Length: 433
Image 1 (tube, rainbow, N blue to C red):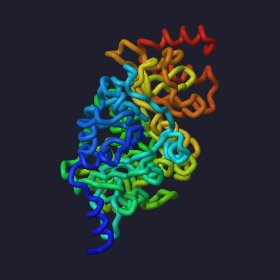
Image 2 (image 1 turned 120 degrees about the vertical axis):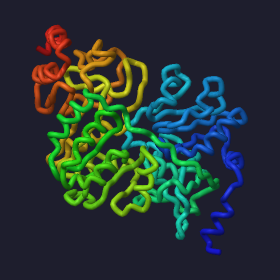
Image 3 (image 1 turned 90 degrees about the horizontal axis):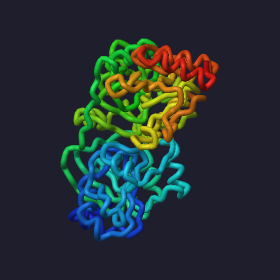
Image 4 (image 1 turned 180 degrees about the vertical axis):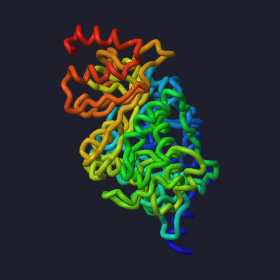
């Protein structure tokens, strides 16, 4: 028996409950983004949560609403959101889920410096290869930095997790304990795409040239853009999330990565979110590398791609171009994520284009998302100094290099017609027109 196989057997634990013995009261546990979370381990922790005191679990985006999402037991186990999603949003609104704001790209350095603790890592992992390595392909993100700092690394090894190339591997010698599971990796479907999203997608797609490198955020509008890119040629991918949309562009022949000048021939991402087909597509794919987020999202590194196109959504934008992408007034909704990282990267890129996309209205056309000033309490996500193209279903506003007055006029022109006069009057009152 080889040394790595012997180590594997010594560190293999009979049950998830046995793995919990590696935890200590007061631990801060790092959990990967999205489907990188280990469900068997987290369900076991949920069931046993009253046995612990002051355990915190930090994660960008929880996919499942585990039992520890419980206001009655937060003194035992508490979720700490780096980014809110459906599972954590109510707790954030009510105050029993903690929140640590940061740029996605800077999270590894916050962990390395001890500003975000990392006592324990729990993660899904691929089966071990012959050399003793597991792949944390579903969420390399900030987890790889935490592996280097943690007292204990606990893996849930599952044959349905792809073994991806890139800087996303952990050696058996770094592992404190592991369990095995075999349930399918969670699937996250594509958002609903309607005529508004299609219209916005067409405006953006028409401005993307052959040979561009893409960063595509999550959401109906970014996916609507993807759907209209299959006729493009020699596109590249340097993004934070790989999903089914990007996979479909590879299958159509639109993505080849040949014309990328930074890591040519390779797609680069830091986490995955999609279907079983996507996860199979990732497995040992020589054209894909999964890297930590301080590599994928670093504006300097990502900006070395010429013609980098960044496509991200916002909830609200004011007439100066300030984006409120993560809250509804003071009520938390999501988080900063990588939006600002990639807007800045595209601005650095030679020939780059940063798009912020949004429907012009909300609540059946009763509320304008283009506003004179952000709603009171709104978390401002991306600065007016960084925003370039803003796209609604009514057109494209280009803001960089424009005066405050010019910006206001550009944005009013892509607002819903029902609100344009109201916006003009409001702009006059705040001396923007």
